Length: 99
Ligand code: FES
Image (cartoon, rainbow, N blue to C red; front, top):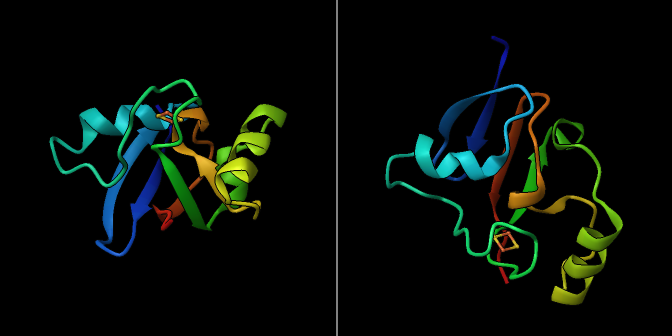
């Protein structure tokens, strides 16, 4: 099975996920060392905002609802994503977004 590498900064923690995995699966992969605070897991709470540092294409494009919600939260750049709405399709480097 093809996997892709997701790197968390600044810890440089690397996780390998199968293609098309939801980033919500990171909760299990990181064994209690979560770098992303997941809440609702459905794009409604804003707890899981990440900044994509490299590999934007690896998480697909933001849907209209995700984009509107992120802008409402004050994250207007395309490199901000709701991790719970992302599926991996390439190597990517992210960090938790700072408010
Ligand atoms: S966990 Fe609530 S928006 Fe992602």
